[in-house]
Length: 220
Image: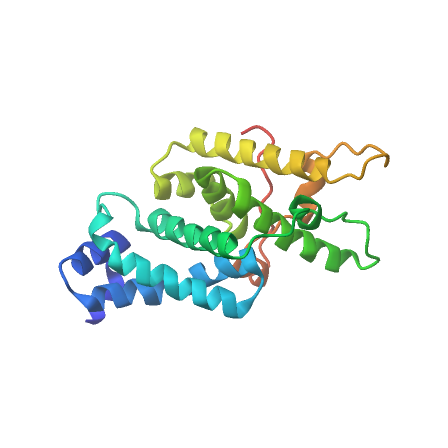
């Protein structure tokens, strides 16, 4: 049904709950790429990301009865995706020195752009493993999808102030993790968010469109 393309996610989900598979197909079509990008950022392997994306939507279909159409679809879907990533990690435990591997020194390579891309991936991977779900969700929507805080608040059913508080806490956690990365005996580094934001990712869409990368609000 062509009209399904104009329906909001929550209406499609309710229609799918009533047994209309074409409504669920539209949800898959609409969000498949976003879920894949999220999982690829976590695992950095296209085949694994594809498998986990498929598992996410299979689980979403099987658990449709648990979804409340009165709430937002996207946070529910991404919670399933994040759980699939965590299940994958449990099946294949990370290296013992995970934090050391996850947060590399930005200056260890002569190619600054490559270093930024490495940090981009490693920070997201660490965040997906360690941040509380809501902190990770607002971080993802703000810095990967380049959404304004007001839109994130509307999507997640939070106040804009709550979103900014969650962003602040997430940034603080990342800064502490990166500071811990410093080797014992090395020169002490004060790692503030101002220092790390230069390498923080924005959405591919925003980069392609030439948009200015989103900067963290210094006063959340």
